[in-house]
Amino acid sequence: MSRDQVLKENWETVINKLSDKFGEGEELQLDAIIYLIGIQELGKGAQSFKKDEKINLMHIAICRLLEPFGYYKFDFFDEDGWPHYKVQEELPILKSGEQTVLMKEAIVLYFKEKELI
Image (cartoon, rainbow, N blue to C red; front, side, top):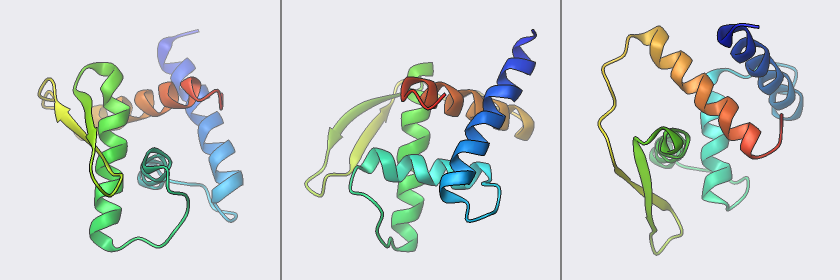
């Protein structure tokens, strides 16, 4: 089976499991999954977040997701318990579709590490 086909099947598994649990009958989109990962990585459970906190949660998730690829490295938790990362290597310039594939690969890897799939 090709690498693309494996990614597609694993991605569908992630989408189905997360949508069943959090989607309220709707299929979750990529941004929603990144947001959920941010909440998970913050480790404070479900709560109401302000707009800027939601953006920060997505940033946390992206850093965590791209850490295994060598782009970011965990640095420290601040006094409020928010994780901070530092850039290890600049991200390459990617087209939109390439960015989406990279994020899907990173999300699949994340959920394999968490033993969801």
